[in-house]
Amino acid sequence: MSVHVTPLGDRALVLQQDTQGADGWKQMADLAWALKQQAEAWVVDIVPAYETVTVLYDPAKLWREIEQGPEAAILLPYQLAERKLRDLIENGKEASERGGKGRRFDLPVYYGGQYGPDLEESAERSGLTAAEFVEEHSRVEYTVAMIGFMPGFPYMSGLPENLEQPRKAVPRAIVPAGSVGIAGKQTGIYPLASPGGWQIVGCTPIHMFDKERSEPVLLRAGDRVRFIPVSGGDFR
Image 1 (tube, rainbow, N blue to C red):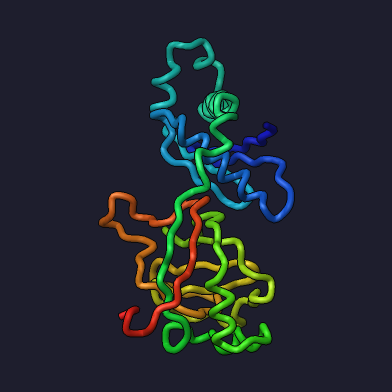
Image 2: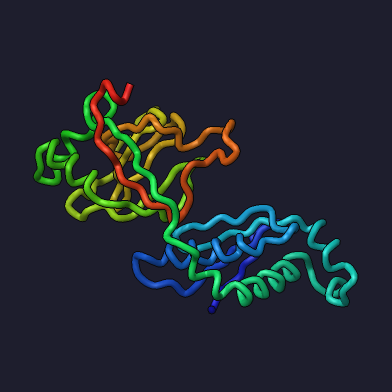
């Protein structure tokens, strides 16, 4: 496994593989998963993205772990972290095949109206009626490629090609939490109210981020998602 390692400040390393094609994110998700299975005390967090995995680490814990070894006197913290990570990568080749396809979530979504203000225009751009657009959007299974932009925001692959949408020319000042949007080839869900430029076609009452939960972020890379259309009454 060929992995390029680059320091990011004094407490993080960025890992990048020679990925190819639109599914390169899967290799990043696999690499992150394998590293998490073996994470040692000096690893603070492991964050997969489309083309990279960022590993945040604690230099003090790293030093304490290796301070008895001869390499401690001649290597900088990030060099020590890189050496340790390469050992974990080598040991994790079998684990990188992942012990499953991620978890499965069915998320209720109310499409259109005040909760999906861009549904009609999005459907028109796709040459569909609003009802046909909803049927197309909800019939497929999406895969969470990464979490980014803000805590809990899932970037999901699997959008049918005919549903692809441009970002809004003028972003909204506030997009409500739970809003389901489309931008380019991706579907996403806003976990918190924030500015945003995605085309909003619906909303889910399920919280993508809740700081009171033991795991505040609901979804993670590799999870699979289906959208289930519901009525306004069910949504409320």
